[in-house]
Length: 308
Image (cartoon, rainbow, N blue to C red; front, side, top):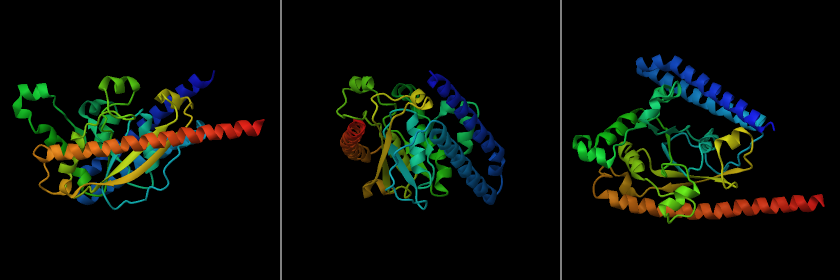
C-alpha cells in the first residue's frame, strides 16, 4: 500500500537532489572564464559536485530504500589514465549502479549527451558546464540532401571532447543505443542472447577524437535477477538484486595509431573487432546471469530449509 507513496517521495528527492547540485554547478561556472588556474579549480569543484550528487543518491538508496548493489570489488582504482567504459543498458537505473561502481575507483564518467537534452532545465546546462560531451548525429537521409554536413558530426564530437583531454577522465557509453527489452530484441532478429546489436560508430569517433589517451575498454555488465526492471521499481524499493561485473579489454594497436580513421579502410576492421568483443560480452553475460540466478535459488532453498 505504501509503495506508491515511497516511489513518489523518492522521485521528489531525486528531482531536488539533481536541481541542487546543478544549481551549484552554475554558481561555479564563471571560473571557466578565468585563467588556466581558475579553470583547473572549476574542474575540481565540478568533480566534487558530481561526487556529491552520486553520494546523496547512494545514501537514499541504502538508508531509505534499503537497496544495496552487489559491486565488483576486484575493479582496480586508477585515476591516472583516461577510461572508455562500455556497458549494457536495461534501465536508466543502470547509470546509478554504474556510478556507485566507479565512485572512488575511477574518475566519475561523462556520458555523451544528445544535443536536444541541452535544453532540459538545470540539468542540460549543468552537464554542458561540467564538460559532458555532446554529440550531434545526422541521418543518412539528411546527409543525402545536405552533403555539406558530412563530417560535421565528427567535428562536433571532437570539439565537445576537448576539455576531456586536459586531464584523466572517463567516458561512459551505451552502444546499444537504447534500453534492452525482449520486444526490441525480437524485432532485431538479434544473434545475441542478452544484448541488442551494437552501434559502434560512437566508440570509433571517441578513439579518433582522443588519440593516445584511451588504450582499453572498461567492460561493464549490469545484471538483474528480475526479468523486467523499471525506474519506478527502484524508487519504490522493489529492486531485489543488481550485480556488477567488470573487466579490462585491451584495444588492438591498430586502433591506437594516429592515422586511425573510422571513416576509411579501418572502419570495416574496427567493426569486425568490435562485433567479436560484443559477442564475447554477450556470452559472458549469459554465464554471469546463470550464476546469479543459481546462487539466488540456492540461497532461497537454504532459507526455506532452515525455516522448516
